[in-house]
Length: 195
Image (tube, rainbow, N blue to C red):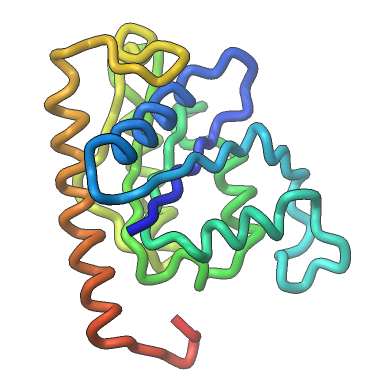
């Protein structure tokens, strides 16, 4: 199973990206799955004017981004909390694509903040986004408070006490994602929407 990790902060000196790197590292080193980070700061998409499939001149990198999302089996959305919700960069990137890029795929929600609450309001908002794009949100959310005390800038986990929560979230994510991928392989379903 291949997993894309959407790192949703484009902010200078961002810290949630540390968690995206940590997820990529952990999945590639400790599971039978593969993962890659899709860094929205690197893609740097302009504000969406038209969806990709109708855009006469797509922004640089958008076709590549869409293909990577399309080819993955499951996703992790990683965002800080800005004003009680996830980043506009995440919503902008998702809005460029058709629903089918995400439909019937498991999407895990991860938030990180410098404060004590870990971005719970953003996490809840992201779960609504997942439902809106016809994905399967796992009930568990990984919220990372005081992120700089738990991960360094290279994505290394520096707080051993947090490791159980981190690994436990991924265990739940893998369980559902593997079940969905296996079911889709055994019984491919095509609806009028093309999911």
